Length: 218
Image 1 (tube, rainbow, N blue to C red):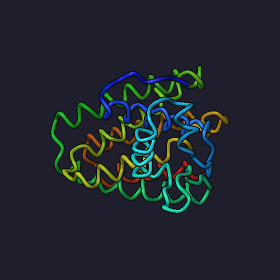
Image 2 (cartoon, rainbow, N blue to C red):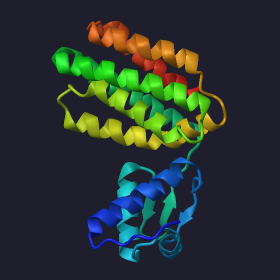
Image 3 (spheres, helix red, strand yellow):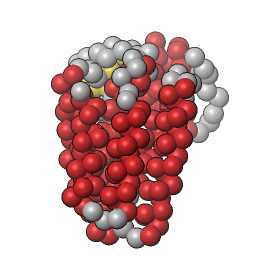
């Protein structure tokens, strides 16, 4: 719980959206939970208008559903939802990586190497402390996957990938809490993706990336 004392409405809305986003990701706000404006205002602070605007941001990301008759609720998180998000991510990121390998320069390669190094360190940290390091680990994941497709020259593709990554966070964090992450396999897979990407081996890079993403469904 926290209170917000800021005259900048945009900043307040952004902070509220981030706090609710985190609580959805960690399961504090469970799937299908009805989100009542007044209850959220008391829990998180801000005005009713700011809460509503924050929920609209999360609705655009796919974490919240908004209907004229029923208001807001947390979106479902079924196995079918996970499979849908994961399949779409595999397709979008494979295409983005392929395009980036065609257009990427030395800076693109360097960013992949740097983000891979950061993710390797984050994986070691979260394996030792899954609770405290969870968000840093997922942020490092996000940075690595973003670096892979950063040179695709398609704003639309990048926006879709970002939206899917946000939607998948609660599944990844649940898997982490339940001890379902195979960090040894992750280490091998991430190294393969990096090496094939910077060597411009499109077939093997895309294959490794797709396999790594799709493992999240199992």
